[in-house]
Image (cartoon, rainbow, N blue to C red; front, side, top):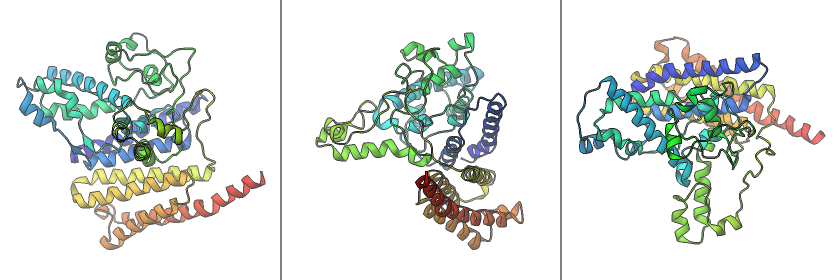
Length: 423
């Protein structure tokens, strides 16, 4: 986990710089692809994902080394050919795992966050799941297991394979000629994120588009069908933590409400979107019928709230980067506490972005926890060893957080209500 945290220490700001470059480019050519609140939501989603992954909060059903020990037909050395074959195997596994996420009700909950943005940009790429607590990815790597690819090779290439999927989440790059027949391109991935009937559930490959062409899920981006992004059941929130579990909550409610015990059980494994007939009739859910007539989700956010949300994201990222930097010097129980405080913070400020009244309570809880740490240890998880006044800066940040949360919850929200009544 420490090695992964070190990788994130460099990868996180690198991705952030690329997002800023895309924003700057969009501003320069007067064709901006970013919405402030949506982008903060996307970037914040990325932070929740790296918190979970760096702390290893997952139960591995079948470890790759176990399968390797019991199923491998060969024992091979780690040469460049092995790395090449491993990358192909990981990409093949990714295709089928991705297809499973799109096709089965329960597994869609593990993937909905990535499709929830109604924009399409590099920030959208960072919307990664935190709702998967069972690790089963090794089952899709059986081909790699059979030929004996070492676990160390898989461990090195898996995060690189994920990072390599970042660049094609953009609208600024058109079709790429002959590359459209070899790798996944921005054009192909725009199709994948679209909810147009021509595009839904297409282009599931991660790096090599050959899998889509072989297994019948390829769709070219059509000039006369502009992609519309999001999900058919809009999430209507900026809070990435809520988005991660919104489909699961709907499945739980439908299973509870269904009269048939068969429906209560099979709803989890039926095709994505399937609902028991009696539940559908009694509890209808709005689904987008005309994608071109749909109005994107937005909140009446002031410039002050937008700036505040950016401030909260930046400070949260800085706190998280310090956790990665000092990862090896913090005990695991304190790492869990650190992650919890940051996690609650993301829930708090994105709830404030949603203009939810309970945001002040959430913010109060995280500020209380943070100040308790500061007063009890007279330090912020070892920050004083690097910067003598570090803890005072952290304390100032958390005090400003509760003041800001109070202002946006009780003062600015009240002004918005009054102004709406006047209009």
